[in-house]
Length: 268
Length: 221
Image (cartoon, rainbow over all chains, first blue to last red; front, side, top):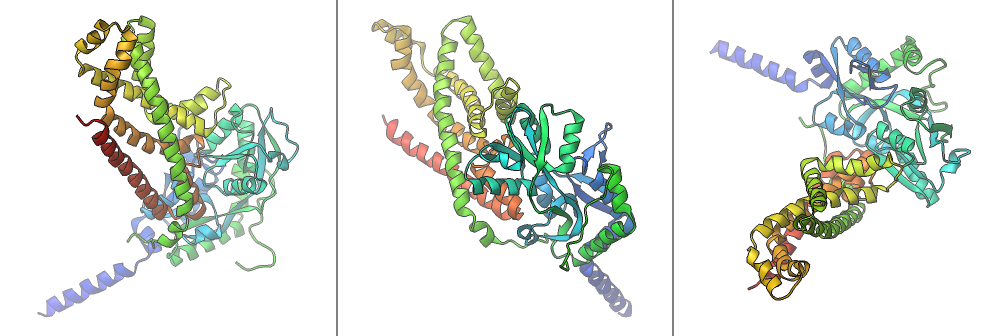
């Protein structure tokens, strides 16, 4: 009788213990951190000659896993599939250059910014374009589901002329631009530089910076996972504090100062 | 467990935009069917013509259309032809891709239907003084279209569903494209796609029901 009660009490405590475990506990217990990373977005995410995932976001995921004392698992997710992957439980967090819009924050939980992009206007050589306003009335496109795509589509609607085409991958956008299907695109300065330098897309040129608010990007996870979001906020702070942020910037993006992640005059 | 709260109101607020997209989807499907039927009849005539070249063209068309993914056909209609300097809008590329696919499948349907029509029918037409083309046009073809009618509605359903492949060529005005756009904006993936699935289902069911009504009226003996 006594043993039964003790056993029942033990079982109850064990059950209560698991019931309270949050995502952060789950990750530590499982020993693996599964990150959604977009591998079609150089230099943030791409593949090397041996088809291994590399890039800023890949390193960032590895750093986070190291801090948690677990092994990182990179799960490739195209831009539109980041959220389904999270909700379906295929990944724990997203390290996927995700812009922290208010609309999206209603659905997912976002951290403080871990990187900020500036965007450039890239045009086909054959198109006369002096600055970003030259896109007015042209056929333009961008990668579906990105901050710059949302901005550009908004601009086309505002101008009331021209066409907007979202393609599913960054590679398709630059292929279409190189073929002349698109007159211009807006992409991050990093992607624009990498693609112009690679020579894989002949006949394109960088025209101008796009005049938009810097694209602050965040790590994300389920909205209710405060423990994990808190941890990741501190992690991002430490990455900057320890100089790792600048180190990764130099490694993947190039010389110069990485973007300031603070916004003057307001608390987060 | 699932860790996600469904917010149907957020998705339903976008319903008007999605219904506009559904109209574009129907437009593409109908156009691609109309063009596909005409082309399939042409391919059938090619195959019966006895000319080696025409027969080869028709056979190649049907083989490629039926044995490669529709996604590939649509992708080629956009990025493939662009490498030859021909630039088509996403709408046109999608329409061409689906029409190509429709024509291939329908030509096979027509071939099957022709097998069910006795040769004596064509000869009866000839004995009345019709040319081979006339006997095909006035005697054989009406029977062929009647036998192939239900398989044709299948292809129509397939055409509606194939429009969702348009996103790969930058299409953003059809139902699937609109849904994908809204998803990027709000990340309300499950609600939006569930809604899109319901709209797709209702469209295809309406087509099937409508086809049955038409068949009942037109093919009464």
